Amino acid sequence: MNDGSLDVQGITVRFGGLTALDDVSLTAAPRQVTGIIGPNGAGKTTLLNVLCGFVSPAAGTIHFGGRELVGLRPHRLARLGIARTLQGVGLFSGLSVVENVMVGATSQARAGFWPALFGLPWSDRDERKLRDRAVQALDQVGAADLADRMPGTLAYGPRKRVALARALAARPRLLLLDEPASGLSEAELVELGDLVGKLAADAGVVVIEHRMDLMMAICRSITVLDFGKVIAVGTPQQVQADPAVTAAYLGLDQNAADRALSSAGPDPAADRDRSSAAPDQVADRDHSGAGPDGVDGDE
Image (cartoon, rainbow, N blue to C red; front, top):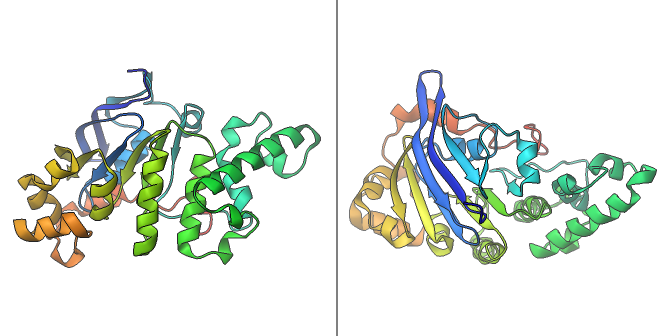
């Protein structure tokens, strides 16, 4: 497919003798929101890391717009129009908000971000281009007034907006969001849902998230993982009604599961004992708080 669709087929990932992902397949259409859900240790972040080139699969293929992605380095993916946010915010504490967002547009610049930042003569045009694009991205997430602030002076919610703006500065055709609602208030959650819906008008959006109320509201299609396997695929309504999802994802009786899926995220106290998944949980935590080079920016 060369229409901007993401096509994942038969992805298998092993860490030593542990299988973190087992023959996982999914598709994500352009200009719609596709969700990936599952309990802790299900393999969600591992799958996202495979899509981003941080983890190499033992088997399987990934095509985006007809281009094979397996084997490409992360910086090559950015040039293909793929951007990702992190579970944390991963901002650079020594750069202003607008400078942090400029980092996200580096792949679009001729001279690059660092020559622009230090004011080298040949980079003036690129610096203006990067800054204009960064301000546009901040405006897109409702944070243009924060451009000159330092990340450390902001509350967590606005910092999440800045992190999203950094991804948008690259003007991606595919946007990968890793738990964008974590740490947000209920009011911010509503705003996030509206924003993600608007972003899908210009790009395919793939979201990993534990807040089921958000996922049921914004996703066109949802894939459910459990212990590295796909156990359900369908619309939010189909997934909500699937007994396998009730049993594997929530570990609740049907009535309690329906309430959780329709209104709020899963109750950690009600989750079934997943101690047997501990090795996969370790595999699923990789890169969750890393900055652009795998090192925390401010977390």
